[in-house]
Each structure stands twice: as structure tokens, then as C-alpha cells.
Image 1 (cartoon, rainbow, N blue to C red):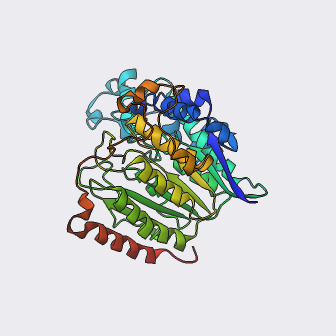
Image 2: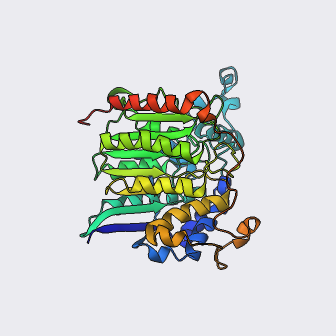
Image 3: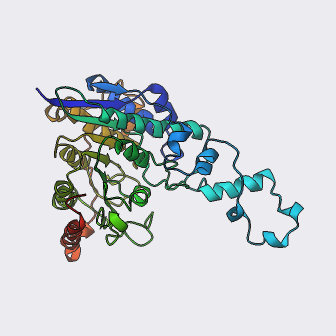
Length: 407
């Protein structure tokens, strides 16, 4: 009998390294601790051992000097790093001291502001990227009697990082590296981004490709980070039509979100017919996230993720992403993994979070409940105003005509 084979990327050392990320300090322990409390790791078919990406693997996409800087290696300044008025200074004065030199390199590579340097950064980027690569290799294996392979790395999904610059809490783009690895085995990859923010780094990396269908559902407005993801942007060159951006307004509800997935993403999936799906499951669209932009619930977003996985039997790579209410991000990702392993019927019976959950005090404000009552906020879904949702769905469907049948 054919079945799913689920691999979960996990080790205590990997969790500790991911806990260091400044934007999400301690989140990894909360996620893996909740999953452990329900004994879900043992319900997976395989624990995928996290690994450290080599420099050679990292520079298969990223700029070599950029990676060297993140790894703490010596990097030379170039002309672009010089101050505008350097030409008027003497040669001696133009020699930067160490602090000034480091400041210029940090600015060049985006290691500042929302992406500060931190102790353990070198190990962090190697671990996150290497583990997503391990998940991609897991999906490339063949097993008799297995209909669908699913790999999960909740600490990956860093979709903003560019080729030579950090951005939006993302230091390296493990998604791009994972897709490049999958392309060694699979012809066509469909990347679906459910994060609140546009997956700009991934889109830019594959804008010219007709082998990677890049579909992002995100909040879009003037001044909203990262400022990209306009619905009119649909790829370049032979990749024209293989980028689909669904830019949405604030207050997005579960019902509106489901409409977009069912009426845009599913038709795109059916037309493209991918050999493998990569799904970024950012949790910052949940109603209680500090961003306070969308109004999604754990069950609503979780069930959509599960539906997408169930559209076909192609392998799926599940990655995390944003999510700054750590307890709600842990609930979401635990819910998805639990439904995949022990089944939705059993998960629906869950009540209080097990007492052995790591950092259980983080759930105290909700009475230690797994399912939170009144999870939604009392905010309007602005996508329902002036028929915006209908118009963006209709426009996005029109973009599907650009997807070549013989890609």
C-alpha cells in the first residue's frame, strides 16, 4: 500500500543554533519543544539530520565575498565601499581603520539594522542552509511503496536574503539553495509563499526561469516591507509568466485567504504540473502576530497548508519563515506536522498543552490551551471592500495564460 513518508529536520544542537536568530530568539526551542511534547518526532518516518552547508554550497547562489564576510573571513574593500569624498583625501587618510572598514562592509552586505551581526552567525547560516539542503536530498530519494515524500524544516524559509545582501531578518536564502538542489533531480519546481511579506529574494533569483513557478500571496501596500511583489510583476525573459504575485490588503480572513488559494494557486498548480512543491509557511499572518496585518487562525492557515500538500503526490518541502508571536507560530507548525503524522481526528481532540512542553510558561496567558478562543481580532477584511478580492483574483487568473504548457 502506498503512503506518505515524512522526514523532520531536528537535533537539539540545531535547535540551539536557530534560537540565536535575533528576530526570533528562543523560537526554535518553543517550536521543537511543543512538537516533542506531543511526541511527534517519533511519529515521523525519519529524522533528517541537520547539516552544515559548506562554503562551496553557499556560493552556488550567494556572492563569495558576502559569504566570506558572514563566515568571519577576511574580505577586501572595493571601490564601491569608498566614501564619496575619498578622492580628496591623501593616500594615508584613505586607509580605513578596522572599525571604519568593518562598518563599510556591514553596510555593503546588509549586516546592520534588522540583520545585525551576532555571536554564532557563521554556524547559523551554515546550519539553516545545510539543513534545507538535507531536506531537498531526502525528497530526491526513491522508496518502494511510498506515494509522497514530505520534508520539514521549520527553521528555514528565509526568503528575503539576496545574492549578496542580508535583508528582513534573513541572512542566507536557504529556499533558493534548496530549490537549486531539487532542480538536480526534478524538472519543474513550484514555490508557494504564504508569508505575510513578499518573498522578494526567491523571486529575484528565479525571475528568468520557466522551470520554477514562483507564487507569492502577501500583504502589499506602499511603504510595507519589502516594497516588492506588485501583482503586475510576472517574471522576465523566458521566465515571463512564471512569477505570480497576489498582493493583498490588511485584515485578510481565513475565508478570503482560502478563496485566493483555491481560485488562483490551485489553477496555477494544475497548469504548471510541478514535479515538486516548496511551501514557505510563514506564521506572521496569524491574527495575534505583532505585525497585526492579517486575521488568520491556526486552523485556517494550517488546513490550507495541508490542502496544498494533498493536491497531488509530488514531494513537498515545508519551510517556516516569519512569525513573531512565538507561541502561535509553534502552535501552527505543530498542528501541521501533527495532522500529517497522527491525523486530524486525533489532533482535533487536543485540549491543554502537555505539562512536559519546553518553555510551557510561554503558553500561560492562554491558559495553556492548544486551541485559543477568540483568536481573531475585530478588524475588517479590507480585501472585501470595493470588490478588491474579486478583482485581484481575476487579474491573477489572467496571469496564468502566460504559463507555457511545454515549460
